[in-house]
Length: 114
Length: 113
Image 1 (tube, each protein chain N blue to C red):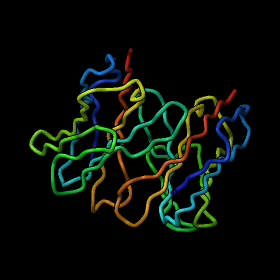
Image 2: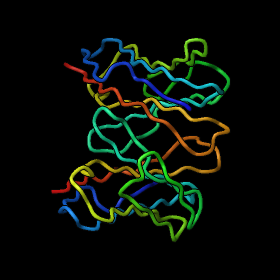
Image 3: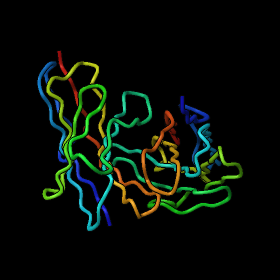
Image 4: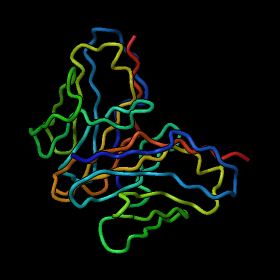
């Protein structure tokens, strides 16, 4: 069975500082990996995903994540955060041949302070 | 633009009431899901459906049932609401048989008094 661990429940950071949100997963088979973002009072929306190919994936708003198979990690990074990045971020994993289910982590709440 | 809508953003019900949460997607997706979201627990799958009239239990189905009479609509039913079902409920949909990106609705925050 797959599982996802987000190592930090809350991450406070000052505006324009770099940030890393950590995610580790466990699986005995190959996986798809996702980061979703949830802004206040909204549903989740996809930020970026790794399906195959290049291990470094990027989003349109400056986030990136790197799939590290040996460390079973998929950490999310941004070199300079904005106030508008304040949100909850969820790491998720699914198994390509495992049907429809996606397993979500507990979430990391990012607070960006002025 | 793809869209998943949920019938209510906020709902307040009393213990023992029957509660219906409705979800509609306009993307012609085969698969639909109901999750509940609680602080520190992330999203937990209640039920999902991969076709009309088909349903599968997720990780926490107890106290819930679902209905999918039309492809675009997936309903979550709380047969007899209890206070421990106070939560945020999220509906999502996906295309195809592989678990790629999920498209989420805005959520329904349910309070059971």
